[in-house]
Length: 464
Ligand code: HEM
Image 1 (cartoon, helix red, strand yellow):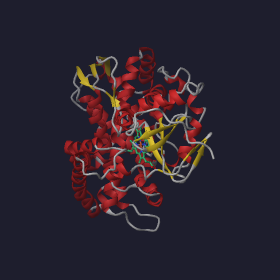
Image 2: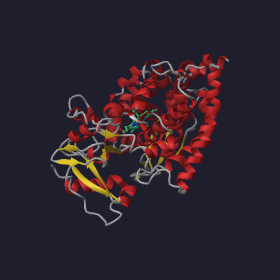
Image 3: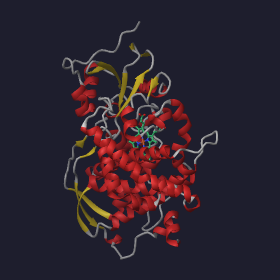
Image 4: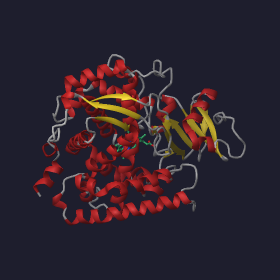
C-alpha cells in the first residue's frame, strides 16, 4: 500500500488550523516549498491532503462527484445559502445544473453585457470631472449593482438596495470551512439572521413574479418559470437559494479581480499604453458594447487573465475523499479533506515563464502559456463544476476596465496595495486612485449611452 503524503511540520494538537484560517495561501505555499507538490497539513487532528500540480489538479476536478465529494466539504456554504446546486448532493446538483447554468447562455448572456455597460457608464457619469476614489469599495458597489441588474432585472436592482448587500456581508464574514457550521457561535447566529432577512426580502418578489409571469423577461423570471426534466416546477425555497447562491458567487470574487485588473494595468505603464491604444481603436465613444467588441479588446482580455492567474479571488478549493485515492506515489485515505490552491499553483516556474512577473502577453496566441495544460489555470475551477459565471465575470471585468480607461486618466495614489483575505474571496486592500476625466469624454448633462436603447428591461419599464 502506498504511503500517505509527507506531513508539514506544525504545532501539536491544533496543527495548522490557525495558520490556515489566517492565510491559507501562505501556509500552502510554505508546504509546497518545503515538501513539493503533494503534502499533508493537519487541521486539529484531521489530516488533509494538498495538491499543487496541473496533473494532480486534473485528478481533483475529474474525480469530483465521483471519488471526491464537493458538497460534503461545502457544508459551510450550504449553511449560508441553502441547498442549491454545488452545495447539494450529486443527484440534487444534476437536477438543478441546467437551471443554474442557463443564465449564462444565449440571449440572456447578451442582455447581461448590455446591463453591465449601463451600470458601468452610470457609475462613470457619477464621478464628475476629477477627484479621488477608494477603488476597491467603489468597484464592490458597482459589481453589486451589475449582479442585481444583470441577473435579477433593473427593478430588483433598485429594490434590493444597500440593506440587501449588508446582509450578504454578514454571511460572507461567517464563512468558515473548519468549524462545524451550526455551532451556536455569535458569527453563525448573525449569519442565520442575515440569511433569514434576505429570504424574507426575496419571498414577496418571487410571489409577484409568479403572479405576473408575462411582465418580465430576465434571469429571475427564468428561475420562476423553470421546470425540472420531469415537469415539476422549482419550489420557491429552491429559487431563493438559487438567487442567494448566484449573487454570492457573482459579486465578491468579481469585485476583487476587477479591482486588481485595473491596479495591475496602472502599475505597468508599458502595458497600459498597449491597452489605451487598443481601446481608442476598438471602442468608439457612446457605442454599444457587444460580444464582438469584447473579442476585439485582446489586450484588455489578457490583462483580465493575468489577474486571474496572479490574484485568484477564490483561491483555495476543497473536496473530501469518499474512498482511498492514489495520487502520484501517495495514497489519500477515505475521509480526508483535499485542497488545491490557485494562488500557489498559478505561479509554478515549470508551468509559466517568470511566474512572479506581470506579463499578460503570456496569454497571446503565439505564447499561449495557459494552453500547455488544461489544469494549469484553476482560478475558475475545472471539470463539471467549473465556474458557471466565468464568461459573465470576464465580460464584466473587461467592460469596467475598458470604459474606465477610455474615459479617465488615472493615477495610483496607493502604489502597492496589499491583499485583504477572506474565506469567501480575497481582494485588494484600500486603494486610492486619482482620476481626471479626459476632454473627449466631458459630461454633457445627458447620459453617455442611451440606456433604454441598450437595455430591454429598462425599455420595458420606461414604456410601462
Ligand atoms: C472573478 C470572478 C469569479 C471567480 C474567481 C469565480 C470562481 C469560481 C470557482 C473557483 C468555482 C468552482 C468552485 C469549486 O470547484 O469548488 C466557481 C463556481 C461557480 N461560480 Fe464562479 N467565480 C467568479 C464569478 C462568478 C459569477 C459572476 C457567477 C454568477 C453570476 C458565478 C457563479 C458560479 C457558479 C453558479 C458556480 C458553481 C458551478 C457548478 O457547480 O456547476 N461565478 N466559481
